[in-house]
Length: 502
Image 1: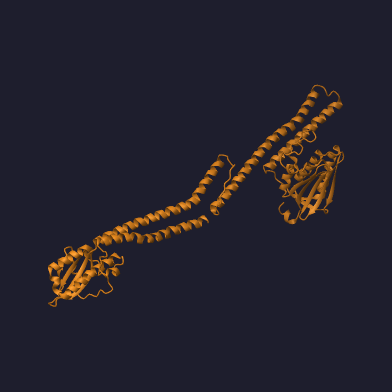
Image 2: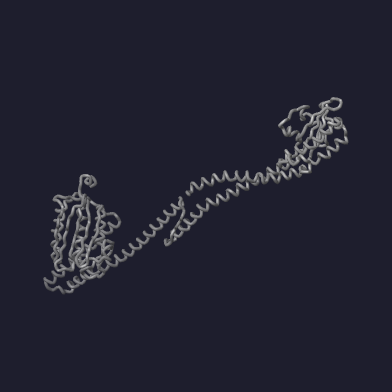
């Protein structure tokens, strides 16, 4: 259930549930106050045969019905003696009987008030009484009149002298109104309490599914701020909070990976510094030794002097090459190296590089060949100088780990749709399966020994990988221990569409 839907449900429930519960408590509260009215007006079953069917639990109706029973007795007395309503003793007895229901009587003769109970003002009520012969069929009461007086019943008759007469039963509704006001006040309080209860329950229900997860996320963010990433944030909710938890957990995992990677980079840089320090110290120490030999006069013949000078020159070239490689790597690492792409004829380009490498390979007793399984004039989109660096690094790596007396290095070209595949294959010692996945990693060296022949800082293949990826290509390796290694990489062919990007 989404938070949006949950909020809609809670809003609807806040409107509907209080109404339903308020309607449900009405009869419960009303029954209590009805009993109070019945008690106040002495409305109860006292054995009269009509009461069992007349009293239904409605205090207003029950009051009128009880007064009707009294009026029925009066009517019978009037039939026997119409002038009985002029008998003061009879009227006093009626008053005493009606007082139990907070009621009284009014006797009217020829439009004038002949008698009224003590609590009824003759002057005030005279104009409010219905006229003689008033038809109030289907009306249970006439109306609430002055000073909380309620007209209940009317009976018209003629005195013996033919004068028009009426008798009214009037009820003091003050107690009933007071009880009704108390009922209304209590009912309003109960409704407010119901609304507060429903609102509190629904607010807790909604907030529990929102606030509690947010507090958990806040605690998790505090842990991250303190540098603790070794925990897991989980949520089974299938809503916006659940999605937020997934995004937060993904962020935590990425942060942890970046921290681990950063620590790995830091370790690699420390190792690089250590390796470079070692690699630089070796030629620098040699140069220092040969220079001191010249100064001390050890090189006392032209042949020795030439040997010392050549050795110093070679060592300085090694240092210069090492510095160039570090400078190139730093630019690749910071993505600050720009590429100058152009159209390159593959076969012609590789032929020039092979001619350049043959002289250096003669010293290591190795040969290099080009096997071009591509059509003539096949062109690729490449940066000439940086692609040259890739090929030279791979070839030099092959020479470095060559363990055969007659080393052979082949550069094999194949067309793959819109790309050209380069394979640089040697017959050297090969690379173990355990080491093969890591040979393109920065600072990794398959041979941990640091002798003069296989030493290095482990940047050659890492640089090659960065350059190939800068060409939007791919690079990988295959190797068999004892038989040799093949380094593959793919470069896209030159086309009119790609020429627009150069």
